[in-house]
Image (cartoon, rainbow, N blue to C red; front, side):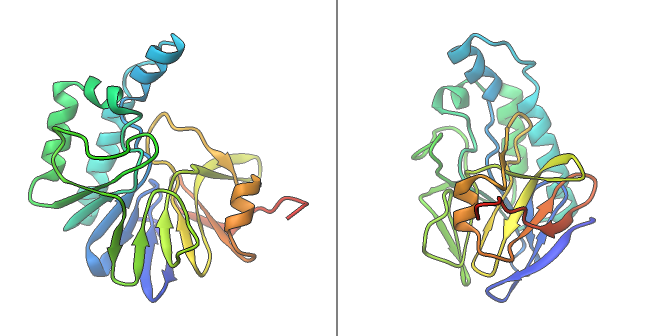
Length: 220
């Protein structure tokens, strides 16, 4: 699977090249920031028409990760939908695809800032945050560690190539955005420099997961 394996609070975690995180001991697959329905939201708010293919593309990649890992549970770390109206806009095919992925598995929706609170018609269990073993899972990083979160859509550049990236240190992990139309925030951004400790690692996604020292700004 070309994953990068690391440890947080005694848990062996696999950063997958797709941007999903796999915890084999718990058979837990974690993704963040799917932003399903983003093309509809962009068209509604900005009048900009994007090809409406991001939701099937995101769900197809998730289906492949599920097939590869056979998880007992899938945990979505917030901003799974671009907003409530975007969720309502999903096609019947998209809704059926989500229902198929949920079959015979526990499915947990952690709420995000784009999709606060439970959403009707999508199955699974809505949560403010989730705790599993020693780890807390939430949408936005806090001071309560060890934790895994999303929200910031981190990306890192190596030799001129910029890619979505995991960030981790000995207290936390920030997952990259999993959605097909999601942008990114460079590792050098002050908020990421602030929350990640010195010595943090960035794991670039793509054909394989590539770990590098997290890029630091000159002021950090």
